[in-house]
Image (cartoon, rainbow, N blue to C red):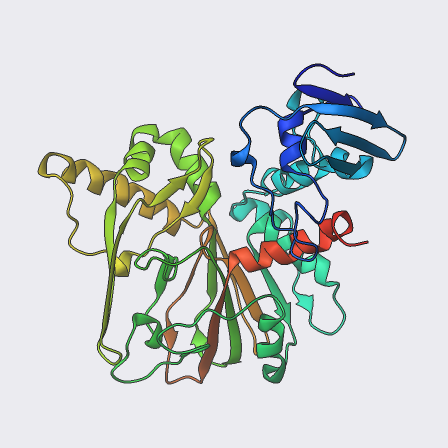
Length: 372
């Protein structure tokens, strides 16, 4: 079915201007990167078809242009990229949105009822831990040799450099650069993104050794905490969404002083939580208006109590060869205190931008739409 501005294919409507803009020919798109070459803004009027032919496999449009131009769209490509919500969106849009919908916002009770498995490095399906990372925000691979760590992380994406280089060694030592290099307990927190202008990060915490007494790993689903916090304390929730707070990191050895202002709870344009950024040890002298300071402390302290509550914490023992992966913008991590004199505790920590992880999955799922 056609009208002056759109056509219906397989029950889904497509605007002609959208079809012209998304023409798949090599004159309009680069053949290997699929980047647009055609510039829709050069048009002086809305694109109009001279002739339209619809077969079982293709939509063929001859455009009213000088010189003449023909667009050919596989029906499968159109169905995958359909944007007509009244008829159901295509796979390309719905599968990406489905990841958000498939998130399981967990608490301690959920974890106890369905204990997450550690995936064996040698025998597990990669899709198993990938799916868990999407749904729960974390995954653990066990029995990973240290010699394989670099290749494993690099297979996901370029390693994100920090002050410590590609890998940050965490051991208890005198003159520590960070509280993590002591035996102190670490309450749930996020790394880097609270006090630096970094992209969303996928964090890798690899245990080279863990023979110390204590030092249990702690994970908290920040999205679940935010959901419950909003339900029980809507006013406090709004304060943490709207009020920028200052976080900092001072490195004596490397001579860096990081400082950033950001909201603790981040929402997208739909009002969905897309990030929780918290690190009490990094909180600095907040620059908040005088008449709002006390109320902010109330909201901050209440949220911190949620993060520390056993009702939301997953505690477990990490062993040598375990590689813990967490969405650094969703799952907060920490540890219980440990006795540094009772045995070695050695971690190698690294990061990859979360965008690379999702891009790998996008390529796997959608390459058939672009590569013949």
